[in-house]
Length: 256
Image (cartoon, rainbow, N blue to C red):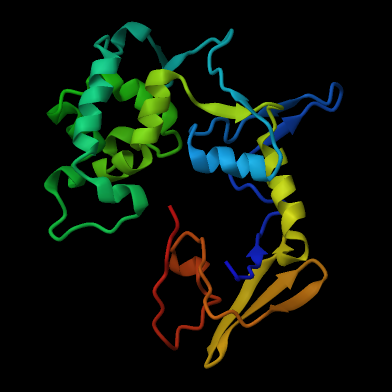
């Protein structure tokens, strides 16, 4: 593609939400962050490129689940969960999801925004009689707080057709070594000196011939080239963007 890149990461490793525990006694690994991957071409190609073997994912096992009402800490009987047809509910969900193909590649929403996307997730599943899938979606779309109060837009975005297919067919994959961190360690090695870990952007300055990116790194301040563009992956809050030169307007692309 005739492009060069620099990856700047504030943590001491790549991987983001990937977390792998290594038992100090047995040296066995256990993934407790990202665990499974959609079984799609881009995933298989990425793992193959970095020579990390894939295997089938198994999310069962000898586990004990406890349902708790977070409002008061009391245990809840599993009998309160909807006992409807989960498969039928996911098929009905897929019909609704197909109305919004643009959600797959970002948040380029039409004007006006479809009213159903502005419903809460709880209202959406009630409107379309999808209560049978509510708990399963809660298990897969974790970390969003009160999931029923979230906009339906986000739940539809974070539960695409590929994930529905994985749920219905059990076709998710994971690393054969149960070590998702291995993938990013190899990516880091592949990037070599073009990756800056334990580093933070201190300033970004636009000039006529490009953009200067200044870093604070463990071995001191650095200037990373003069790229023609600076795509960023950053939670778009004002406090996270203080380093930006705001003298000119900039359009941010938030990857999905």
